[in-house]
Length: 375
Image (cartoon, rainbow, N blue to C red):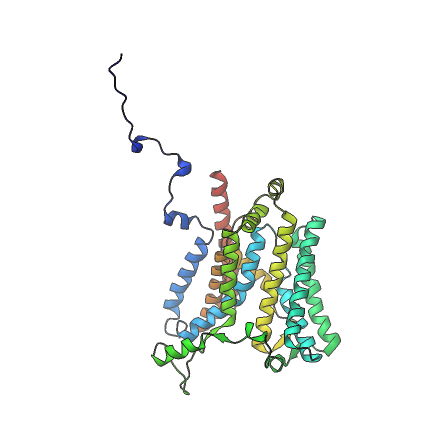
């Protein structure tokens, strides 16, 4: 018998499989698609804290102002993010805003429909157009860029032609008169938290006007829609099977089909969601201004894509987040209002958008290369 005793091996002496190594929270965050947008939002805030710190930009009403601008873009950017993660584009979002606005205004103002029925009519046709967009892309195999570019012109033409046909003008007012006692109108108009802001004014946290009322009555409902849609989209992407399908469709649709993912159905639903969010934007805008205009939503599709790309989504699909798109919209709103508060020439805003898009694309391309190298 050998008197050699087996040497016990401590668990710490055993090699650790890199596949089960723990990853720190900071490293996880740095690897998230929205990291660049969060960092960019912080930098923008810091910059304007110095450049416009004494102008009232970061007062209660100033914060509400730039959040409201961000919310308007964020509502459609969140939907565009899901669609781009799924590997498709929708260039008809902006035209859909003007089109749905007319679908609401013409029946409600010119023909006396109850506002709630005009709203449901607008939502129904928006969903129908979104489904048609998705069906054509899936049926024909054409790039979604081409199909939705066609609908960009079709919907814009309808937004101009329909009001001219029925009213001989391209602007229709009088929406505020139809909102009285309508049960659906409060979902798209007004403010929430008015009691809270009244209390904050009473204790001196926020200022009051000459009449003793808070300078900010509440949070505009558009901000609530923006935050709610961001939470919903994030939950879908990260917490549901449908979210896994979205990433699979954008990453490799053929492989997704092979494992049973209903690629066609997923993409059609995503097109319908972008149309739905464009309709929500249109409702909010019509209720806020009290009118519809054929030219509403111009270039909003491009601004939404910029916000999504700044938010970390890849143009090739399969990667991105709704949170990133929301932070991209926040950067947009902060800069737009920041330029206003600093008194700078607003023409420079377009320069900023173009530069941010290029920087975001270059950064995302770098991330994509690193991701491919790691496989």
